[in-house]
Length: 88
Image (tube, rainbow, N blue to C red; front, side, top):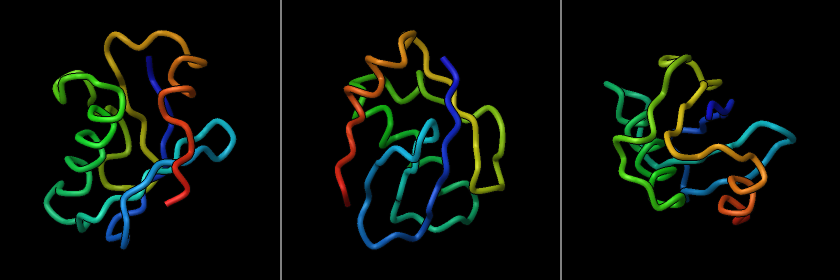
């Protein structure tokens, strides 16, 4: 499954929230040398109980708007349930 996300690097607190059909992901890592991208895939994998290798960024490597691909996740409603807003 592919999903559009908006990344906020350098955030005070990590968090995930839905903005319509786009997932907003805040990470503490700076947007340097791929650190924020690694933090995004790690956070998503952790929240979805997937190996980090199953979550990868496939578009938007250097922009805040990205596309991630997640193996073994096929249903958006299941994804929304697992990634409920945590209001951080």
